[in-house]
Image (cartoon, rainbow, N blue to C red):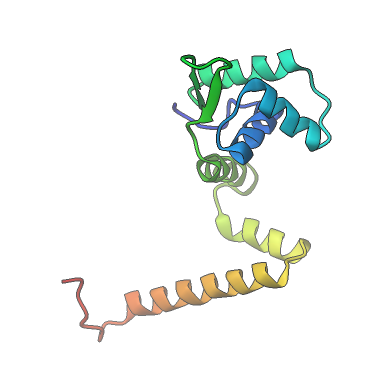
Length: 141
């Protein structure tokens, strides 16, 4: 699949999210999961979206079982990365820094999220200092 998420509609993505939550599932299981999340949707609509996702090589369908079982072929992380990259390309001309600053300045982070962000910044800073240190004689042998 050339672009794992650009051709996915919001509703297809919602069905795929339910399937990720389940790891694999029948149309009925996906439908029930969506209903539990407050989404009023018909059985045949879920079936149509799962069939479309299969045609787009985003999910696989095991037709040897009755009822058929659908399994995601593309991870949540891959779709997320692709959609974020596309958004950053369109809104920020590909510049990640302004996008991250926008999120950090205008969204509330939990203590855990802030700590994780701080660890990432510290690691990136250490990596950058290590890469630019001409006296560093360590090798990857």
